[in-house]
Amino acid sequence: MTKNYETLINQAIEELKTNGELFVDMVNELDSWNGYADGFRCFPMYEIDDLFCGCKISEFLDKLTVDFDHNADYIVDTIYGLDSTNDIEDVYRDNVDEGDLLDNIIDYANHIYFNDSDFEDLINEIIDAREADDEEEGNDTIAA
Image (tube, rainbow, N blue to C red; front, side, top):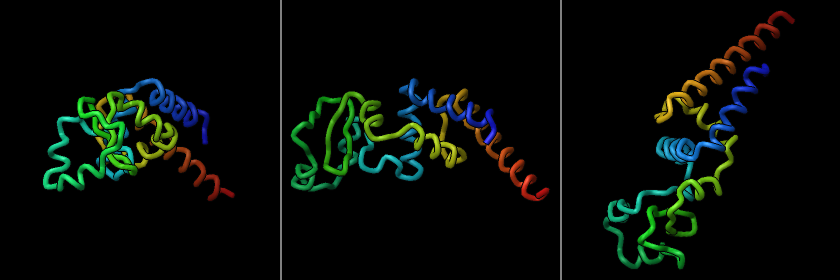
């Protein structure tokens, strides 16, 4: 890979590490597309009735953990049951590696919404650089 590609990748990872809103948006977008956040997805607490409409109260109570607080901002649907949080970024950072997230963003860039146009431009630059590297490697193989 070229130095430009590596520089762009590092820039994108740094952006995911330092921009919490972008990080959360990208996890949510990927989860909406392909279930990326399976086991730790957060939803606004006001959606709790919609999420569990038709659920028997006994089933609902089975999903609750001792730390659940219905006054929190978000409900977290985990593999261990329901939890609550006021810090969605913290939940996602505990469960996501920025490099893995970036790989998925690049792979599904045509299927997700970018709330940050500068980051979307960076992702498109990375994709273009990767394609240029792939073409260059293909030309080297043909010449050999």
